[in-house]
Image (cartoon, helix red, strand yellow):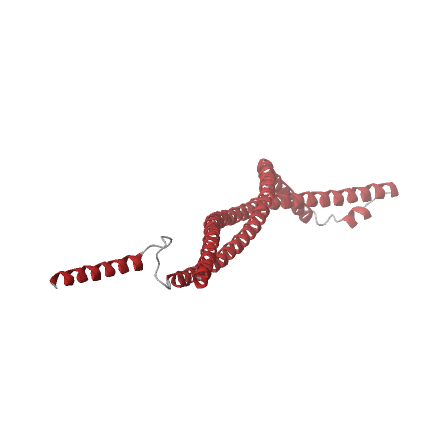
Length: 260
């Protein structure tokens, strides 16, 4: 009786041991618990859904990065246009400044003599006015009436005309000298204004260059992100295809099991 009980106990242990092996046997070894294929199929489909969701997110991210890259490239092109305009303006301004520097150098040489000429002309005109005032009794009319003959009258009239022309000429020369002095002094002011404009343009160019550099760095970063995201998208496509193949295999296996 005791011997039978021992044999029966060993049999129960062996049965339990075989059940454990049967339940936990790996896929493909020929021993599977009923329903494992359905579980694997459901898990495979869940994983496929996850991959699909990741793929869609990655695809949207890639499209956004590509759009941002295109926008940044377009903005950089606009900055290039503005930089080109500033360069042209600076080149033109530098030419004007160079020409004005030459004018100023030439004017400085002549300005001192022009101021001396103006003083001489002014003093000469003062003397002329003083002379005319002191000789007021000898007016042009008195000179003409004192003529002894027609020939003398014509000579005196011609003399008076020449004196008047001389006075007008001297006055015009003085006015021209004064105008030249004023224009020469204005060159300094004009030069300072051009120099201020140049500094302003150079500041704008420097600021624009900083923005341009930042945008180029941003574009480089976007390019790196785009490459990485495209690589991730390709990897997800590969994994989705592998998962699809696994699902097809599991479906075929389930159909075989159902037919058995």
